[in-house]
Length: 170
Image (cartoon, rainbow, N blue to C red):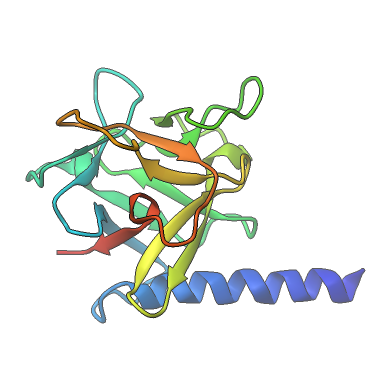
């Protein structure tokens, strides 16, 4: 059992190192403030002061689009905290896990629904956010015709650009 736990800790450390490596060279700390952008850098994850939903919006000069990527979080995942609201990025831990449920930001409660596995694609340096609680991927609302699409959680799908993000530090 100790060997299995040691292996799990090494795997988590490697994943965190991969996330930090995915950030630009200037970002070497294990806690880094970054914007979470779509692959084309047209939309950025934006928290709200009026509700708990997280939407993709054009880049703005606001702390509501800045997220602290905390690789010092508990060893079971990475915590992502909005700079403007101080809310944790997560999913609702109440009730059954349902595909299509929104990704939210709310008061941090130290629950696994607020922890993410950040999976880095070494080829294009995009990042996939997999929620520890639901095991579903953060996804830009599929086939959205809205100007400010919500972030939702869906089954992870290899190659789905709606589940690939870039961490932008400037």
